[in-house]
Length: 76
Image (cartoon, rainbow, N blue to C red; front, side, top):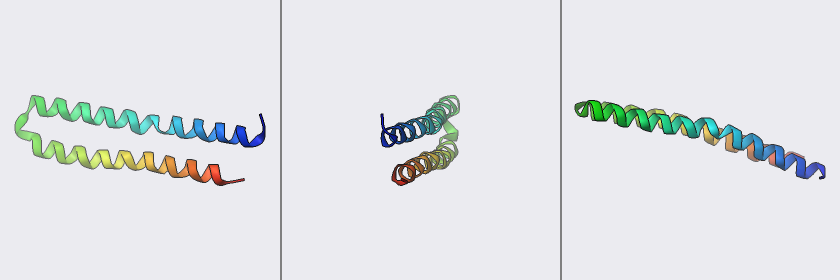
């Protein structure tokens, strides 16, 4: 395997492992929000608002990982 192939393998592993956190985080956010709404349906509005805010922040981490992966792939 040449250096370019090893570099792409490293970038793929870094991005793949870096996306695990946001993926698990989004799943836990959705799970917890649905449990909260099921236990207290009257609090649906505030729970949903907070869920959307935290999900957006969590997705931002995934986007940062993707950008770093693209930058690493372009560096010689």
